[in-house]
Length: 164
Image (cartoon, rainbow, N blue to C red; front, side, top):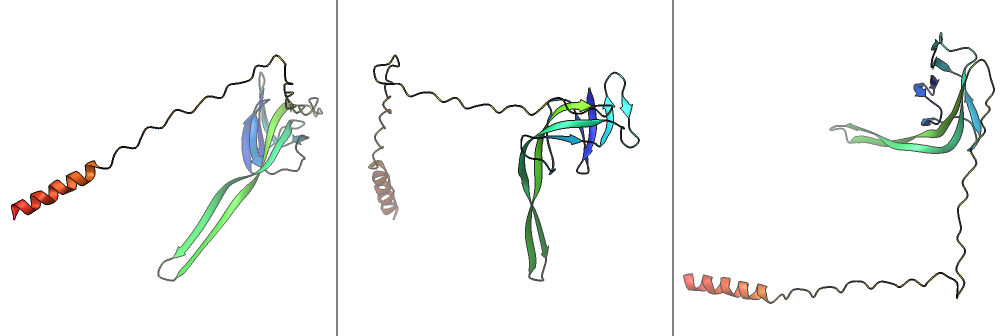
């Protein structure tokens, strides 16, 4: 099953577990939000809205709030000694679609639990863990001798003096 939703002036085709970057919406990170402007609900029997499908919504989990890439607006008026440079970054919300709802149902899937970081205990002396041996860095090669260059320069000067 898929749906076409409208948010932030843009339209997105979504299926469950899609991750989207949309314009900023209200909601804390980790909370579930409902997007109500559903234009099409597809599947075995697609339903088209006029303009929206009544009773349909898309439940999504807010993953992150961030800012988009910088857009630079540079204006220059030639021969007028006038220029202006301004930057702008969009506010973005990253969401994961959890489910597509029809008939005015409420979301049943809650936010995913966060994964805990595994912390390994430091081995105590005399445990089974063998000590790691540090590898030595390879020896650096000696720099080539610079004596070859002065000889070549001496030959060139000798050749010039012979031509005269």
